[in-house]
Length: 546
Ligand code: GLC
Image 1 (cartoon, protein in one colour):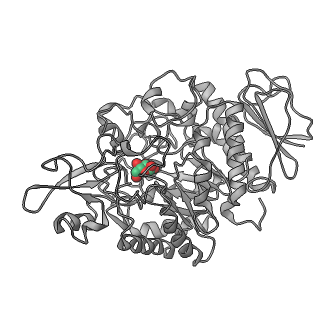
Image 2: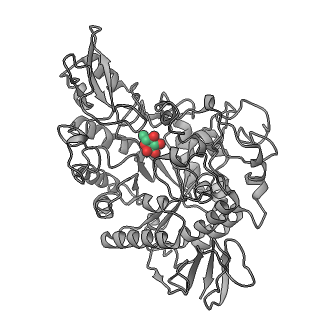
Image 3: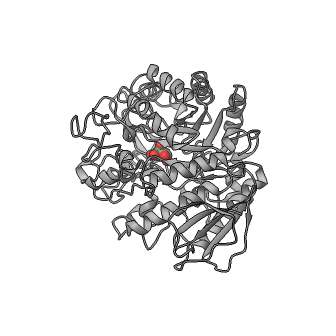
């Protein structure tokens, strides 16, 4: 990583899901005090920045992705003062801070939505959202056929002030998450002001929630009316780019390279990179990589497609293996079908070979850290945590589970609180001195995680944590890693990928079922799973000096 290149082109960024990182007041839910008490973990890990999932005032209909006040912190997590102190403390440790912005929708408790309910049909207050009369004789049918991501229609009918059933409002997610109308100048002005509010408090950037969804096709046409293969009326509308051009001007008006990373589930690479034009977002999450099966052919294809697109636009790629919405990759890679699709129910509960998943997760960590661009680490990746698939139903909170009557297993399995130390739950989640004391964590932790705590893995050279620490340290020290070129090397085996980075660092990944010979090299810098008589074993990665 060269010093001349801006930090965000090469950064290693750690995602904190605040409910589950660390709990400072022992109420069972993680919070800012907890994050502050465990910031040293991130410094020791060697990441450059943290991204904190939403911490704003929220009724928690979707774990904070339903925001009632974008300029204050939910009491569950702490206070605005503590947020400011956290930002300063992170900066003093050399860590940048990215906060999560949720511009597609707010909470139904947001004052604007409450005002819209009171003000009634045709009012300027309602024009900030998508209110429509229902269809059918008495308006009892939703205005169009759009489904909610969390089950059922994307519309909810309201009761008007006179007590009669009234208009419907659009919510692509839970009913408690009404979608903003991004054609409203008031909405645009409000979010520009929110950006400034947090930039003024020193944040280094924003992760933009469902960044491709903000602008809808005018007229909100039925999906059934859209010809096969035509663009979706719900996502990736051309009009959204003007929003990000305005935001970029704001970010650029601040000192110190403030950035945006978009949550962009835009499968078409050419459409995806449009968001990364020089006057729009800096980076976007590379979900096709996260979704790819564990195979040399598939990985090579997705890496090539990623790099070709990003090179074309001059933006750095990102490499992400897991996040708070997707099945943890130790579990994914331990399944016969190791890809990820949004139909979680298809694979949930099917057999998982955890040792294989773990080997592959180790290999994948070294692969991602050697590829050009930025790398993301979701909390717990560095501990080798897997998806917890046996959470008792009465404890599940995810609206994706409840909105589908349990048909969708939901995302709580990747949100289980982090095990820090000790032999029994809550494994120091409630603070270093509260083993077994205090309220139980909001989701139960598997008892076997006593072998996966930060304390248990620290100093164990074979642990996932020490692999991450060594790899991130090397990645920082190697000038050829991070942003920059890479070149594929020919291999004898089509189950093997090998590429080289400037400065003579070669990364070899063996996806095949046999050990393979290493290419000629001067030294081994790091290996994910050791060697088999000098050969690279299956499901392994090695970094060589060549
Ligand atoms: C994004 C978030 C997810 C949330 C949804 C609605 O996909 O990552 O957690 O449920 O948006 O805000």
